[in-house]
Image (cartoon, rainbow, N blue to C red; front, top):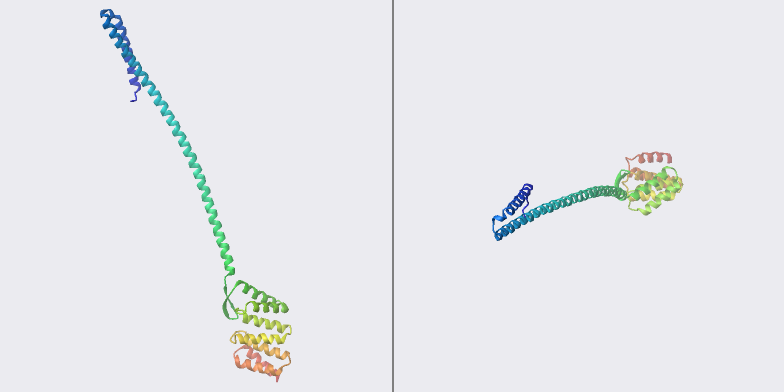
Length: 262
């Protein structure tokens, strides 16, 4: 049904008033007509009046229904907007929480990776330079060698012997091996274990005759022989040292020692 404006509704009421007046006039002049014609005219006017009243009521009711429907629609729309605002606020809060959780996870991941890298770095071989030689060693290997050397330098030669012997047993192919033999021999010399010292000094020279410590090891062998009252053996060792390492400081010391043995 078409919507009817307020002006249209007012016009319809005027029509009703007009029709009622016409009816009254008709009744006033009913005598001028014949009875049948008068009754027909009156009935016709009544029908018209009733139809106009019915149409007016329908229009008014329709307008009220439409207004009520629009009101309900607006209320529903407002409720939907409130729900949307609420959902949007919840979504924004969830997003903020999720963003924070992701940031925390990323930070934990970075911290874990950093910690893992540090632990792996401790396990990975590193390059060191000892007595003029560069080589790679594992963390435990380096730690054990440096611990034994520290004990030796503190003057605890008995413990140092034990530590260097254990080191050579665990790492026979270590880049530290030749240096470890040198310090082991010196610790034994310091505790007057000359025979064992000679064995280890000779092992050093046999293992690497070009090693930086080799001339000193040969000189130490001669010193051990002298301590054992083996002057002949010491003299032969000193002569071999001068021939094998003529430019070394140990060779200079060997020449001085030979002079004192004459």
